[in-house]
Image (cartoon, rainbow, N blue to C red; front, side, top):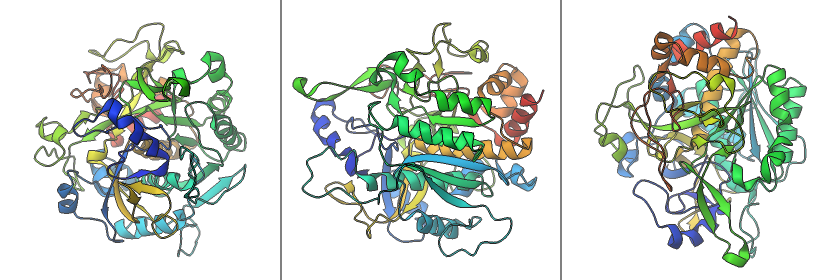
Length: 497
């Protein structure tokens, strides 16, 4: 989920952010402005225009450490699952985005070739065979081309279809990297969501179609709006039908917790200046009790080590250097806090010892965490139509086709979806709402210590006073990040106990 660093690489949909720079200034290592919250990746840095992934030296030169799929797998101990044949086989991850990307089949092929990943039936230049995972797209409400708006357009850019291309590449490529044998269904709608005003009804209808037709066992959502931007609890309740149906049909639904720290973005009428102002709060859908909210961290492990989780505090970014010995640090922009709409669900009634308390009247967000900061981001390949001039704007010039180091809870969410697909494979079908099982594990000190990496440093006070990462559950990383080899089988066992 993005806040969009326009000075590095951000879509045309974010150009309105420039008007906010003077009002909000900048922060070291964070965004310089508060743009519109969609599409929902946080920050991207073009590192290389080659089809060959950049070196770590190239990433370090721009203050980043870039993670390959193999390095991410090592950091979260996914490898032992693969050796057991647990790789998402037979499961389908539904990824929901506005518009899609005309070049996704091509970009996926470049990504898979570059990192030696399992090819997918449906990606460019691949001959399908029995047993291969499939990449496909579902367009229920129309499929407009992902082209930029006319140059003479005076709009905000929110409807710039090509600005979603990087989000789509991020979601598809990173989900595939975690669950290489899972099918991926890219579900697209022809309307972008904008601060709770439009788009959500279409997206919820598309998700409900996926659920009702049994097209996937896990749904990844990298879009969101702050709870206060909706017209009260009744407005949200009318959108929850897809989540209710998902829970009843054994489908897990995940959502990024947002990229504004403990703030949301609320609108000010044009008559009052038309600015976008931060307010304390949390983001929906991650705040929904029927959804697993995914928070975020800086991943301070060695990106060159693809075998084990090795802490590295010597290389960028500053957050890792400032916390020697820490494999992960709570990300300053990770969405989190307490819902103003939903009461605390029963599954949050018992938390690990030392947790940040959750009051009886409010839902705590997020539930779990994963790597999210773009400063320790994943490498994603995208070719922007046409030929690198598809609407993304980097400092006043079109962004280039190539490799981006990218972050946001848009990064943490599809990777978690890959883990859920692996759990579904082990389970022999969808697990449905995961949260009761996750918090049951968290309530057992031994299982919690074995299954999670507890992130206890960092905070999410990006724009307003936030929360610290603490022992146990906290409003930055939730219960923590997954030790996948232990958590996935324990999650399935808990669901079946």
